[in-house]
Length: 197
Image (cartoon, helix red, strand yellow):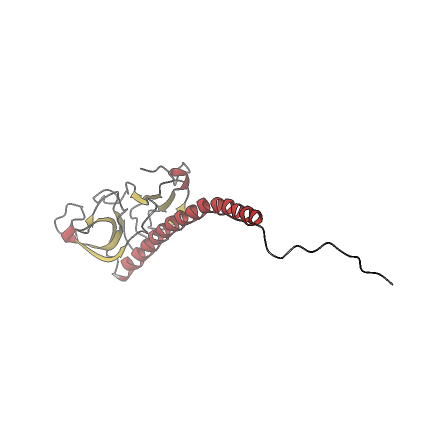
């Protein structure tokens, strides 16, 4: 037979102020470590969304060129509010549309460009979208404008670079082949590092 020992009186339930303070301090430290990674995640999502929009734009341009019986399609950066082709800077958005070079100057003038679809990159995070010097046959202006032809005919080729406030290390590129096929990359077409403005 066992006998009960007379024990010391038990501690009342609950937590002391010191225990609560230590727990809150540890939670604060863990939260402060997570905040920078959440910011990087949001920047990565915005950059990825812009890359995907560019890839969709190029795919849509190829489809439109075929649908319109081989008529060339133009993709260019837009300058608000006039919605005219800007050249290299696509940060405010871009459009694909048909182009009728009425004056024969090989330049996409606002009166000759009929936008079919507009695309706007995600806002925030200092996102810049810069088109390179696309080579086209025949060359068209303004510089940074893509000409897409159907049925395997050679078109513009070059690179579009997407940067944010983190600089070249976090930049991505959309590389456009001469047949208007596009791919995403973390380097230039020649394997060299990307540069940001």
